[in-house]
Amino acid sequence: MALLEKEAALTRHSYYEATVRRSPAAAALAGRVTADVCVVGGGYAGLAAALELAQRGYSVALLEACQVGWGASGRNGGQVLTGFGFAGQEAIEVQLSPADARRAWDISLQGVQWLREQIARHTIECEYVAGHVSLAIGRRKARALERWVAHLAQRYDYELQFIPPAEVRDWIASLRFHAGAFDPGSGHLHPLKYCLGLARAAQAAGVTLFEHSPALAIEPGSRPAVKTAHGVVDCQYVVLAGNVYLGEFGRALAPSLVDRIMPVGTYVIASAPLPPARAETLIRQRSAAFDTNLVLDYFRITADNRVLFGGGESYTTATPLRLKEKMRRRMLEVFPQLADLEVPYVWGGFVDITMNQAPDFGRLGGNVYYLQGFSGHGLALAGMAGRLVAEAVAGTAERFDLFTHIRHRVFPGGRWLRTPALVLGMLYYRLRDLL
Image 1 (cartoon, rainbow, N blue to C red):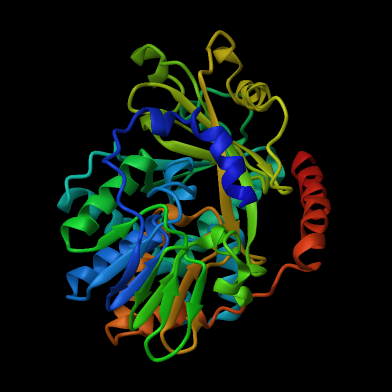
Image 2: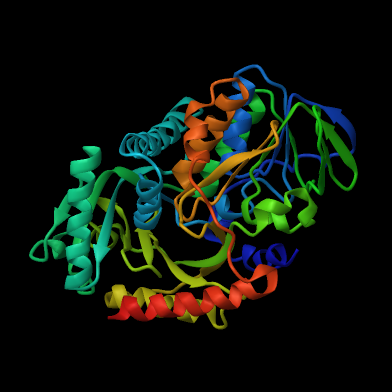
């Protein structure tokens, strides 16, 4: 349970946890229960699947190892993004036909729409703001970003606004960036408030939630049995949505999936509140933003006028030393005018990436589904994945099966050697980012 222990050490410093009021914890599973579907994982994907299945009339039991929103769904940068990222989109275009790649792109747009519909339908107060800016450091990355804007317009009829060097200072109060691209269809929100809102909606729809109930094994068959330390869920279908934590509680749960994703640590700070007028000067339209480096920084202004700044990826699962100081230095490289600003919050967690950074959905046998590998684009896509798996369970699998056609490789080196190999690879790309 190494990942959980590392995250627990940072939980008490999370701005998100400090600004929510959680409901009393749900009971742990004890004894034997029966449901049509057992969902494993209380993040966006699991909660969305449970909600959509319950709305279709299925009885659903959801097992969460810790608390709802404990993992990436409660710790991320809050950026609601269209698409699959540069690398993920390329992998999809290489492997799928142009028509199917277009279908996948459109599903990503529907993921943002689904998220906004849930916010409205279930009155989830999660501080949603529309707008996102991608920012290029240097001329080479600016040219690549301009090509990306043209590619999306030509291939997917999706219009971004390219921001040339002469105008980039009108969008962000920083000398670090050479050009940018504005996406009005993306946005940002308070991710833990959104996740807890999905949980309330799922419970209201009839989902039975069990917290502190890690799934340890699946007994396969026409009616699978999902086992925890103190109970069993007998069901017809299983949905695995535990992502990087599937390997934490005994690899017997889904051994073939564990090496197809890599846990990557990402870290975030939140500053003290700024005066509203000062906050307004930093990013035009209060958009979310990130740079286009492979090892990227991401940032936004919160509803209470704090600067939330993230990045600092760790590929060893070890929390960096002097984390707050390092993250603050990264923030000041972008916004040196914030040198007087205190930083009361620092936290982190792990996201799940695939080798090709495209999502990894599929089946194990005929009645065990899995959703993983969101690779930093899970806030909107994971909810849509939950909807797709609910459609598949209900007998309409075309959209889900589109993603099962994307091939994925395991990370090389096995369980013990793959992390050092990945670190060396990422150091190479970090050096490339600096050129």
